[in-house]
Amino acid sequence: MTMKKWHNISGLRGSAKAALPLPVFDYIDGGAEDELSLHDATRAFDRYDIIPRMLMDVSQVSSQTEIFGRRIEFPVMLAPTGLTRLFHKEAELGVARAATAAGLPYCLSTLGTTTIEDFADAVPGSKLFQIYIFKDRGLTEEFVERARACKYDGLVLTADTLVGGKRERDLANGLSLPPRLTMRGFLGFAAKPRWSLPALFGSKFDFVNVAHRVAAMSAGPTTLQDYVAGQFDRTVTWKDVEWLAGKWGGPLAVKGILHPGDAVTALESGADTVMVSNHGGRQIDTAAAPIDQIAPIADAVGGRMKIICDGGIRRGSHILKALALGADAVSIGRPYLYGLAAAGSTGVSRAIDILRDEFDRCMVLSGATCPDDLNRELVRPHIGA
Image (cartoon, rainbow, N blue to C red; front, side, top):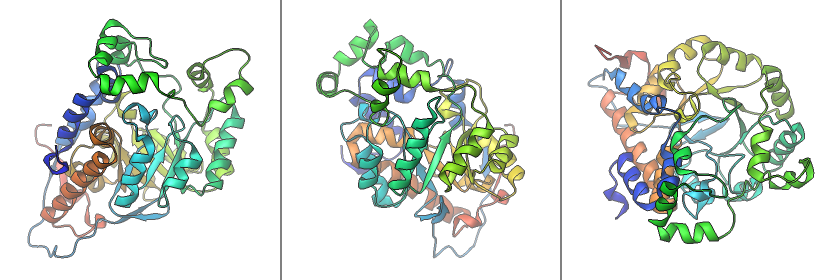
């Protein structure tokens, strides 16, 4: 299939499903419990109508905007996702090539499969690092210093993973590291030998940025996965965000914010960006759709910080609606992972190109020449929603 035969993100999703073993596809595609938050994050965009303006001069249109102190080509960043090598052998570096070529920021996950240093070498443009405040504060401090040494533009603190969500597709498949599969999961891997044989019998899928701490910090024999799970700290508060902001001293986003009051507290704690997110519907089910919280959060912070809508983006019109309601940019995860699984770096590029073409088209058809033209006059709640 040529790249241009993928006309939308849904098409990339179908190709990813065809390429991956069922347990791995379900890991990308699934959410928590009944997956209500997962599906509503996208359906929620249908609750808003676009009210375009006519006969505006749109002969010159620019999609550029600024986040994390960098001018970017259009208002999209690539979200942090863990264990990216599960989805394609090119892993984070394949995503990085596509993001760099498109002029977009890409955020490396703490639980990625590429080191902070190798990622920095591969991304000459805007690069971010996603971080947790671990029980082992020394590990968090180490990440801050490594990110600083590698000249990352900003940190993204994930706040909504004090405990993992109940992701029932993964439970049904028995997906774990190393794989301990149910019969359903085993059959899923067996059906895709071109992926499964090199993946299961090749090099390990390690959390490469934390692997060195296991032997040094654990009290006894433990697996890498168990060590990481044991590091999530339920005592973390906004005081710890203040501590992190002071240690870092640069652009800092807090990811996982849905309540306007938390956005204000993030600002007061030293963050300059909030990522409005329900973690892709993978944590608490029935959590609010991010798009529904953009306007209340924008009203609460009053332009004093950047707002990124994270979750549910599948169309360029979704980007336009998010910006019109008050976001400065959006963040995508599954769309680029579908592209990566379907065709490596070229698939990621195709996902980006689809969204950019749709967004630019929506800008023109709405009478807007730049993201600053997008405001609440261009959207309304759908009648009957």
